[in-house]
Length: 188
Image (cartoon, rainbow, N blue to C red; front, side, top):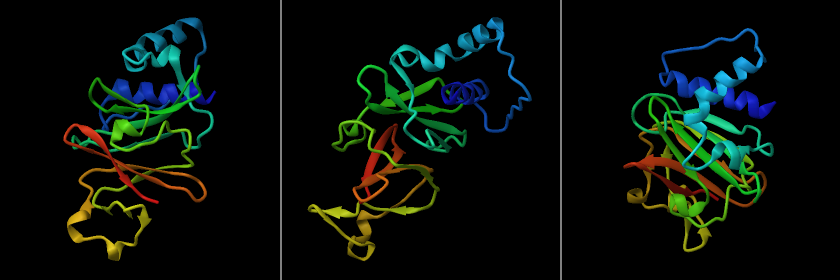
C-alpha cells in the first residue's frame, strides 16, 4: 500500500510539475482501466534508464520514505524517495526535480563525493531549510564543534537540502544541490 501511495504522490508531482497546482482525491477507482492509465502516466518517471519500475521498489524500512523540498534553484517542488533494489536489498535515493523530466539515482556515497556503500543505514530522513548554515564537522577523523570550524569552511544553503543520519550514534550528513550535482557534507 505504501508503494501505491508513494507512486501516486510521485505521479502527482511528475504530472503537475508546478508547485502552484494542487490535486485532491476523494476516492481511488481500482478498475483495470484506471490502473493502466496510471501506469502509462508514471512510466516516464519511474522506468529507464534505471529500471525503477522493475528493479527498485519504495523502501519499506524507512519512515518517512519520501521528502519534498526545493533542492535546486527553480522554486518548483522536488521529491526525494528512498528506494530498495529488489535483488540486492540495497537502498538508493531517487530524486525527481519538479517541473522537469530530470531524475537522479544516488546509489552510494560516491554519487555525492563520499564513501558509503548504500543508503540502508538511514534512520533520519528530513529537509534542512534554505539559509541554514552548514559545515563538515569532522576534521582529520575527529568530530569538532562549530566554534572549531574556520569561517571559510562554513556555508549558507541557497536551497533546501536533504539531511540523512543514523538513528542512534553513528553519523550522517547533508546532501545539497550545487552546480548541477548533489554534494555531501559530513555531520556526525
